[in-house]
Length: 382
Ligand SMILES: Cc1cc2nc3c(=O)[nH]c(=O)nc-3n(C[C@H](O)[C@H](O)[C@H](O)COP(=O)(O)OP(=O)(O)OC[C@H]3O[C@@H](n4cnc5c(N)ncnc54)[C@H](O)[C@@H]3O)c2cc1C
Image (cartoon, rainbow, N blue to C red):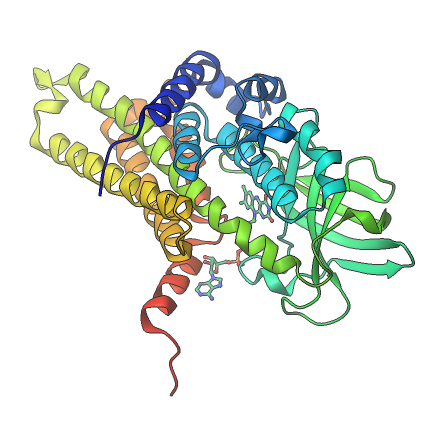
């Protein structure tokens, strides 16, 4: 076992950290207040190579190992979780085109995705199918050399801003995974429009939108993978997504901890810094311990993926533990700042509002516990 990042990983982390401190952190509060998705920032992220984390160099990508990717998401989330989520979704789409697309699809889409000329979104959830994602009802019907798509999708991060949508729709009847097929749909395709923009508790700089499909006809070349095999592709990609959510949670928690520990040193009550009180020290000590534990769990899950090991349970553990930890740490950071923490003078209230969703998306934490529990107990018969 070794617990040190190599030189390249440290360099990546430090570069992204500097970029975040200069270009993201100073603006994140304003983007949140104004519900502004910083599309302009993504041109800079493309220059840094961060839109091509899942694409090989032959397509202009700058592929990184999973551990380095976790470092990238952690650092960006310290500045703005919404940006980290937008980037994660984009790279997930790029990764799916790379892993499951054919040569024509790769050549058509990857260079543009890597350069930020196209921005990606991933659409699995519907109003009636969240945790039970395999019960989705959006329809795809084959028509000669094309597919007709009809239905409504929900909760699409980057929705409206993205140019390319990775869509899961059902071919044929039924409710389970069989039949679910994956398609690439471009913004502007006739019959494809946008519905409601969600008004959310947090993550205001990340648009979450409905997608509407009404007699939307796409060429059969827009299908990714085989007919009826889309759900498997989505699940394979969500494992990586869960490690990213673990890393994002660690980043947000670390940012909250940094603000809280500075405040505890500077704020005085009863004639001394509040950090001198054991009640504050114990809170900070618990926060530090839990952040470090979540960081190690997340890095380990990423490392397992890099080694080609089965990382499904490790990814679930990292996602679940780190997001629960970050909810607790951000809440305690608000507590340490007292009334000031409850105002927008400090970023901790935003961290707390933003991080809540990490316990919900990419599979709720109840679903993660279900996955972990089943892996412990195996099949049970009564
Ligand atoms: C801001 C945001 C962004 C999102 N982005 C995307 C995106 O880009 N693409 C996309 O496809 N989706 C996205 N989602 C959707 C997200 O993945 C779903 O919200 C999530 O999977 C939960 O589904 P649900 O909201 O329908 O909750 P439900 O599935 O209805 O769950 C409600 C409650 O029941 C619990 N529950 C459900 N089943 C079980 C069970 N078997 N055992 C125990 N408890 C259970 C859940 O844990 C939860 O607490 C996003 C959601 C949000 C809020």
